Image (tube, rainbow, N blue to C red; front, side, top):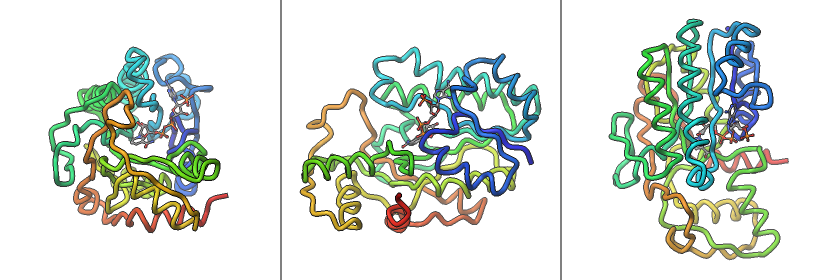
Length: 279
Ligand SMILES: NC(=O)c1ccc[n+]([C@@H]2O[C@H](COP(=O)([O-])OP(=O)(O)OC[C@H]3O[C@@H](n4cnc5c(N)ncnc54)[C@H](OP(=O)(O)O)[C@@H]3O)[C@@H](O)[C@H]2O)c1
């Protein structure tokens, strides 16, 4: 099976591509080689690699930056996926596309199911939802995996940022009114492999199980690392970021479990593993 990955050198790509390469003949590209918004570049990549499956990890992921550059966000997060869906249709290639919990408003008090109504509150969320819809409209062989709160060995995730601040300053403030499921990027590999091997189609929610606030997450990180850090709880309003984030974005993982048998491990077990692995 030949698998082509777009946007594969970011946080998620760094986490899953080594594992994908163990299962498939896998070619990994990123924007320096292939801008997904270019149909001509896409055709070149399809002609070069003859993929059976395309995994799209490419996106504009700077959530606050998207508020300032809605045009760029729309291009990368909606028009790019639409171009890819067209190519997959023309070349009879299966598409695995990654989306986000930010398609929801975070007002639901119980875990979000795949068929819950989206209501994004940010440019990032709106453009990612538009990407999902443009793909689904094409009626192609496609699975959309929504995930959330990713971290991994990319040097850019929440874990890296808070440990760097803590090491420099010994204390930090972290929001305590957003709840979600921190997810080790590497743990997405098995669901992606299952989506390919089991021929999944439609939307799937995938994250580590259990939930916490960002404040709890920071405290857990310092506890595992045995770092003595003062973690001050603050509200999202105190932090005052441009884009509104969902207050509650925990996923219901029933559909994934039912269709693949995959039981996602608890976020705390994944964090322990990640920190034991950290270079
Ligand atoms: N990180 C999270 O917590 C999170 C949560 C939920 C969902 N997701 C989704 O997961 C996917 C992967 O995210 P990530 O965290 O790995 O993001 P990332 O680290 O920003 O990686 C995305 C990669 O795509 C590239 N890219 C951007 N625009 C592109 C384009 N037009 N053509 C080709 N490549 C392009 C980026 O290059 P540049 O860096 O040069 O822009 C980057 O290398 C995205 O769909 C994202 O929406 C992420």
